Length: 97
Image (cartoon, rainbow, N blue to C red; front, side, top):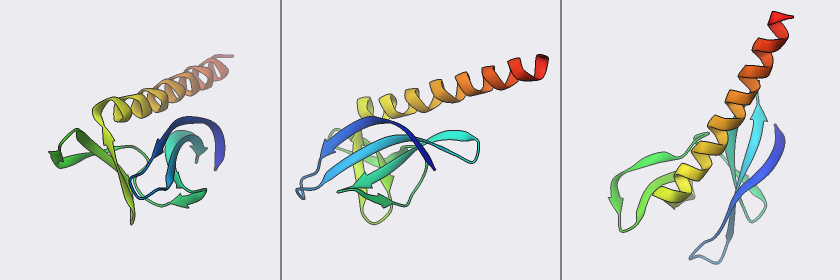
């Protein structure tokens, strides 16, 4: 896993600090969740919360999981999609040479 940049920091109600990092893993970009500096396993992108609660619509992580607002989830997804699009474009250009 290669860390590219920090996407989002969020202070948790438990007092912890959640950091969502853009990472390159197995040839593609995804998000990684760290809580208090420790990597938390889970899905590589925010997942819809079913049903949504209050203003939380998405989640990431796996014991513990972190709830995300629609705006936070969209920000993470946009970063992932953008970096993967740039990577695909560069790869395509290299093949054309």
